[in-house]
Each structure stands twice: as structure tokens, then as C-alpha cells.
Amino acid sequence: MGNIVKSITVAVPVERAFGYVTDWHNVSKYQEEYHEYRPVSQRTTGDGARFAYKVLSGRGELDVEAQYSEYRENAGLVITALRGPRIIERWTFAADAPGTCKITYAVEYPLPANAAGGVMGLFMLKGAWSDKVKKVLRKLKELLEKA
Image (cartoon, rainbow, N blue to C red; front, side, top):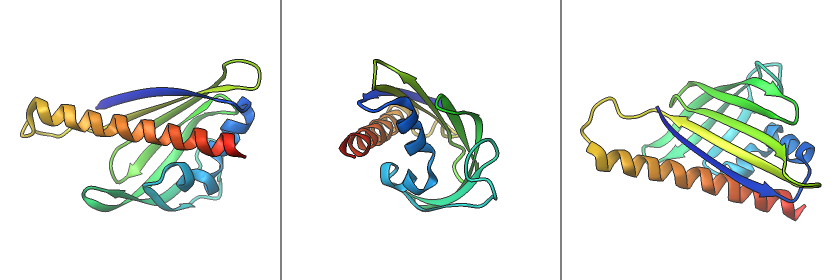
């Protein structure tokens, strides 16, 4: 698995940042490649909450189902894809200074099964994931700080 970890500080309290990220109604607002995001379990928050959505990628539209785990109110959660690309997203939230929150977003993504792309292909894949993570954090900062 490849791994990208990025952080950003937002000028809102931890509770507000965590609440925004974990409210399923907001996910498509900061994860712009995610569409038709909807719950598929009775739980819509906390461990065991499951969601289905479509992801627009270079390979077209992919169906994904993911589940929350390691859910710690105002501290973090893990979102693991159960169907579709085997992606694991880790979110952590921590007070950075009074009234601010440091959000860390980490993504683990599958690497190609063969070395056909070579080292250059792996660097390109890592660059694409790094750009995606940065874009998500920038959009999240914009949305949180404008309200």
C-alpha cells in the first residue's frame, strides 16, 4: 500500500471541524470526486456506519462502499473501503491553538500488482494521491472558514 499524510490548520474549533467532516451530508462538498454519497446502514455516525458512493476517476465512475471504524468523537476516525478500490482514509483532529484545529488526512491506497509502470509510474501514482489529499484539505478549509 502507498501512503500519503497531509495536515492543515483551520480557524474553527475541533468540534466544528469534526462535526462537519463526519456529517455524511457534507462529504461530497469537500470530496469533490465523491457523488451520490448515502448511508447504507441504520447508523450514520460512529463505528459501523456504512456509506455507498460513486467516485469519478481516470478509469471512469467506480462504485464504493465504505465503513467507519476507530471513531473517537472530536478526535478522529478511519474510513475503510469494503467494495471498490481498497482505500483506507484516516482523519485526526486536534486543537492547534484556541479556536483552531489541526486536521490530518492520511490515505492508504493500493499499489499496482505488477511493476509494468516501473518506478516512474509509482512516483506518478504517489503524486496523484498527494494532489488529491491536498485538494481535499484546501476545500475543507475553505468550507469551514467561510461559514
